[in-house]
Image (cartoon, rainbow, N blue to C red):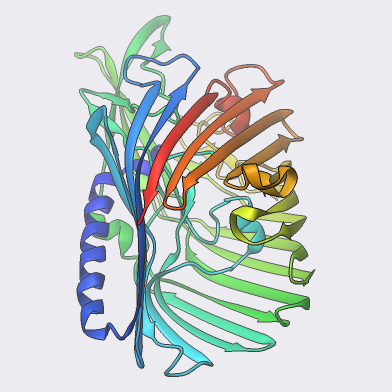
Length: 468
């Protein structure tokens, strides 16, 4: 997953500046209606599987989250951000702003609004439910629980009781990010369990030869200065039947890779150079369903057509192909809202295409050495959350449990994620959970078998957070 984290440090600095500028711009527009909340806490995660010399199995993390918003007669401002730092390695830190924008206030016009910045939107309910990251990217510090982030640009939103239109355009592009990597002395490493280390050597003429890896990092502007745009329309009221469609032409949220290599005879090593690539795609989604106050069922279809970029012939390139994804989903809420209630979700996902064989001098016919952009191509997802007070009465009204189960039908893999939250005080949350991955496939899976590839990443996690 090199393409998730090749520019983590520079993108972190970009977001700190982006966040500071937007906060400064928001100050003159703060009206009498202001909202703000935040939390700070510590969470520790312990992995059970084996680790290599550079990886760590224990991650105590200090995390802060915050929301700030201000709405006046003309303008409004909204920001959601989070920052994390590993307590056993202060170089392992991150900052992310899933949503950060300012625009016109609903009080100025309840029908049409303009926003500039990063904004989350329901381009595709199925894409958000599966955390696919095709419409909106995700911050993949944790592959099992990625943080969805909005697109960056300008938004025009027109909303009527039975109709909604959203138009998006942007001159810039921010790729998905994940766990940080370190390129040092010809090797690539990460402390995260979610990074599969490439082989340190290969056999040439019957003898093992060392591989020196180098990331050929372009200027940041060559990554982010890529325009894109899209449009979303929905017909239907708050309840009853509804239909929506969305189309965009924009860069893929995931960077693709190319690589080159040559044999350095004096050094008795192979020098391998990695080149990140920005690739555009057309993406179209049509969804339709029926919604009541607590129930929403829909069927979604998404088509994706990549636009091949130009690369030198001497490079071996990761390739993607046109893809079609469809599946039915439903969600149902019950009980009171908040900790006293709960919800259930069920979804099926089926995809065709999306990945293709590598091309270039070092490629193997019909195969790819890269991890698939599609985590699942034939899978079922079942999720649930409930407050135990709903089941066992007042003594457990401050305790809630949640679970998510994914079954990869095509690869015979399973993921079970469970969690328990206890709120001894309204402001205090104590959590405990476990995630288990299992697969019937053989170890050493290809990039298209997500669960088998990370089958050793079983873990437990616990934390405490204080909200203010």
